[in-house]
Amino acid sequence: MSEQQTAVVVGGSTGIGRGIADSWAASGFETHVFSRSRPTGDGSELLQWHRLDFRDLVAAQAVLAAELPDRIDVACYSSIYFTLRRENFVDVVQTDWLDQFDINVHGLFLTLRATLPALRRAAPGLFLHVSSEVVYNAGPGRAGYTATKAAASALIDSVAEEIDPAEVNFVQTLPVGMVDSPGIRARRPADFDYSDYMIPADFGPLAAHLAATRGRDHASDVLVVHEDRTWASVTDGVPVSQSRPLTTQG
Image: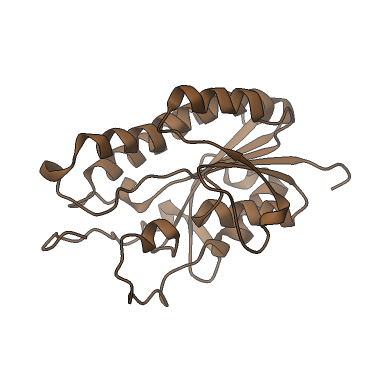
């Protein structure tokens, strides 16, 4: 790139968001990560961290207003709240229900409102949203997660209809299977085998491609990333549901 460009990843300290942030930083973008925890490990020195917690929406909005860079060429929303275990709807506590909406939906709303002016000035900017197979596969034990991720996906689709692709391209992505991340590990037993799980870096090639093209060839599409780091439109096949009946909590 002849001039350094700027990337923002909200929810980029771990998980898929971290894979995307690392990819953009490695591609030469000045990369800002907004998240509750500081990025650590290899590549973290390339990421500029800003503490952000959508469980306090007023404070989160103030952080975005004060700390987002003036220039934003590409942005990603990957903040997520699963809850600590799968539970049937009748067992879900109200705090978990509200936290899922604050982080999975309202945080996306605040991020869109805060980043869109700069993305439109980039012309075209890219907004990448990390979605989930639950949008297409309702199932037991994940009512709040399913409701919030479906709402977030629909929000992206609606905003994409309102903004000229010459200004901003909107793309959504999701994994074909489970991804090894701290959030997932908090829900699994200590001796769980993650060898068949995807890893955050599997999203690196897609992130690099979308940043380079600003998503022009995938505008308004939902892209499923596979274990071999290739991707395809969700219209070519919805990932297998990760839902399962709850016989025990977990």
